[in-house]
Amino acid sequence: MKNPNGHEIIQLFEQFSPKGLAMEGDRIGLQIGRLNKKVERVMIALDVLEDVIEEAIEKNVQLIIAHHPMIYRPLKNVLTDTVQGKMIEKLLKHDIAVYAAHTNLDVAKGGVNDLLADALGIEAAEVLVPTYETVLKKIVVFVPSSHAESVRKALGDAGAGFIGNYSHCSFSANGTGRFLPGDNTTPYMGQAGMLEEVDEVRIETIIPEQQLKKAITAMIKAHPYEEVAYDVYPLENQGEVLGLGRIGKVSEMTLGEFAKKVKAALEVDTVRVVGDLTAKVKKVAVLGGDGNKYFMNAKFKGADVYITGDIYYHTAHDAMMQGLNMIDPGHNVEKVMKKGLTATLQKLCTNSGYVVEIFPSEVNTDPFQFI
Ligand SMILES: [Zn+2]
Image 1 (cartoon, helix red, strand yellow):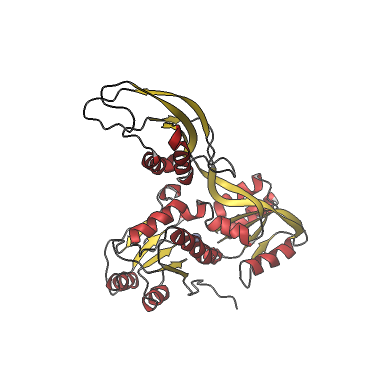
Image 2 (cartoon, rainbow, N blue to C red):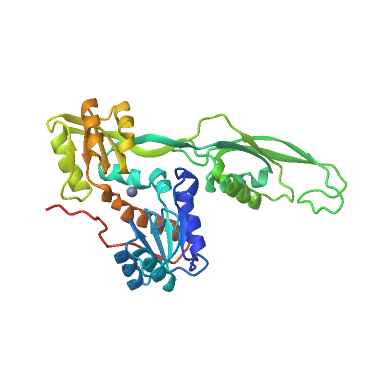
């Protein structure tokens, strides 16, 4: 067990929600403060508002991980008699770092959209708007049979060999390795200047490009040779498709019944509904945040109803004319990420032996009330 610093926590977080998944131009990553410090308490927030900063100070937090970037438009200045300037000043004075994970957390497996789909009971949810396809590589490594098992395990533990719901997939074949150790070598087998023949195993497996470096490092560590012989091949196979929104099925009910279910599941008092309340719904699409521009994706994929926030008057008209029902529970339902991310990050930290307390912000940042 160890007390991690900010970098170590963010490194774990980014394995789950890599920056590379973010949409172009999004403002993500460390926005305020520093990570090279001990972190004992992390608070997960949807928005960073004044109340949230007060909460962080009160709870002695060193790092806030927020979904909505605190700084979106580039700042021209930081004036401490403006609201934003004052907020930045407070954070810096209390040495509280702010890290934003926005569209990368929407896209990530287990991120905002998966959390919303889970809350709504959507089964076998698929991606609604593909934005990213994993690039796959093949690793082939030659290892003496005595170490084949440990090298296979190291590769599998580092994320190699994921095919569908199977992990640690690999193929091995036996053969003969030959090498001639040169001068100034300390070979694991044989001796300098003598041609050596060894029973070796050829292990092959696949890996997403972004995990390649980590897997190779783990593989070399588990391998007994001074010089490890391995190849990395580019692959044409289609990788996993990731993206915004999710679509899948719920048990059939009317639009009116489903709207009530949405209210309860996402913990809101009201929703705005577009469509005939007696219409049957079964195929359901959801997209966290403002999903106006993706309503046709929901229509094309055969959704009976599309749930998203910030629906404009004219989008509602367009959807109505296309025969697509819509439910708007508000943008703030993305608050599901607070508990969801707390659980995920706590698990990642515990598995890495990090002693750190992670908790969701309790401040309600919904600017709207209905009277
Ligand atoms: Zn949002």
